[in-house]
Image 1 (cartoon, rainbow, N blue to C red):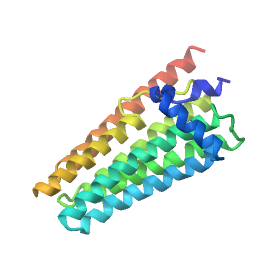
Image 2: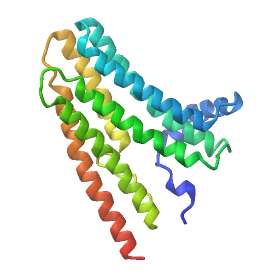
Image 3: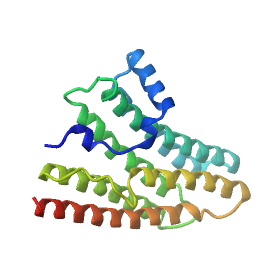
Image 4: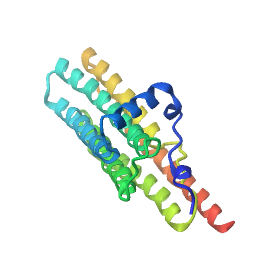
Amino acid sequence: MESPLLNRRPIRVRETAWAKAIAQKLVHVGVKPNQVSILSVVCATTSGMCLVGGTTAEETFKAVLLIAAAVFIQLRLLCNLFDGMIAVEGGLKSKSGEIYNDLPDRLADPLILVCAGYSITESQWGDMLGWAAGLLAVMTAYVRVLGVSAGASSYFCGPMAKQHRMALVTVACLIAAVETMLGWKDYVMPWTLGVISIGCIFTIARRTFLIVRKLELK
């Protein structure tokens, strides 16, 4: 079995001084990694509520909610960063840590993506685009975990891994806020969800290929 360190998502910011300092501070004040993992779902839920809530708000408040949605998406990613740092670098890994590390992500991704779909008010396909992106996002993770359970490596490659999906939705929220303030139609979110869905299909195919090749060469 591979070392748990080899099964961690490679994140460059993990090595930065500010990330290490914050992680150490969180460990010092007694924050547990599993608590941070659960908080990531709270952030994702709040982001989703902002997205859906904007559909009935007046223009200025809708723009504020879209910006708030983008902020909470990034907070969710920070939670994903620090739960692992607290657990591994902080020496607070628990026996159930893998469950808390992985399951919240499977909830957070569709919460954000599906709600992004429902935030589209000028297209009858918005909800379908959101559900497609959300389900395909879960499938990318399922394929990775399936590969590990079969004895392959843990592949976090894209082109539409978690960080790529969340970066696109974050930018889409900010652009959608500008669209709202200018009175334009919401073009960016449908296109973003479409790109995420197509990217996830390629990601699933790529990871599956790498896993099968790894297993066949053993």
